Image 1: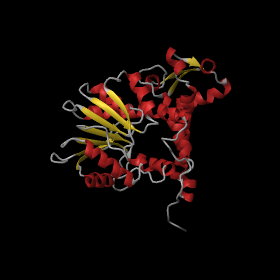
Image 2 (image 1 turned 180 degrees about the vertical axis):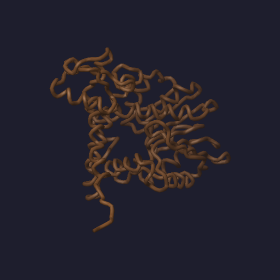
Image 3 (image 1 turned 135 degrees about the horizontal axis):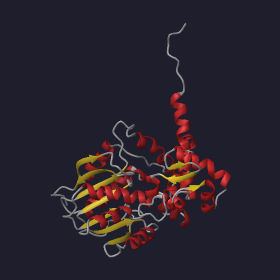
Image 4 (image 1 turned 45 degrees about the horizontal axis):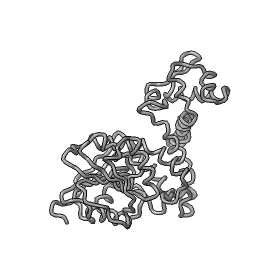
Length: 338
């Protein structure tokens, strides 16, 4: 008789079940079931009427949302959890319910990873310059608050009061630039990104009331020099969508535009050198495998090599920031750099 312990597929079954709570959250966000509850507890029928959904089909979703902690149950009525009340009620200052656009896109993409790996060609390739207008609008509506949150983490992490002129390279919707402008009134900021993207950034900048302090400059940072000289630079989420050669070219342009002694903050996902931690980054990397021909989340060592090759002094890595893709590496152009 064998004395070996019996192995059961515990990890496999746990991972197979892990997706359903996420899909329940996605459905609740897409249907905006949390906003009607801002007035207080409602029955399933009242919520369905307010949301314009089928009552019989809505009730199981409401119970699922209770099970995952986004709703509470009060007899036959439902009410928001404190977290849902703050972040998922439309009109709230902290509303992030529009992130469902990003979640659906990412999860649909990752479903194609096996096919991408088999073929060696991305099955859901991203083309920021060539996106149809409606796809671009959905993309940035889903990611703007994530970028804003990461920018607020960065803005509070250091004293930026001595700086005057910041460039946000590949700034996308402008969330990071807006966060820096909110916190540091001493800064004038340039967002440098592709011409197709700059109208999106301009709209968010205008809506935030920073048009006088934030300039949106159409720029291909891989091939074009930056417009002027700066005493601080940031780039968030740019390395994973570029090839190694493109990263080198961007860093050369940033280095040329920075004044001697000025810092560069590379913000986003940064893997440990083991390639397997943090867990969320190691697994999220599959999205980049599927969306970009040569894009990946890179390790700290890879970042350091590129930065030092470009002439920067590597200063530190700040991991595990409490917001989406808000880790950063700080590098500096040497005081004697030209």
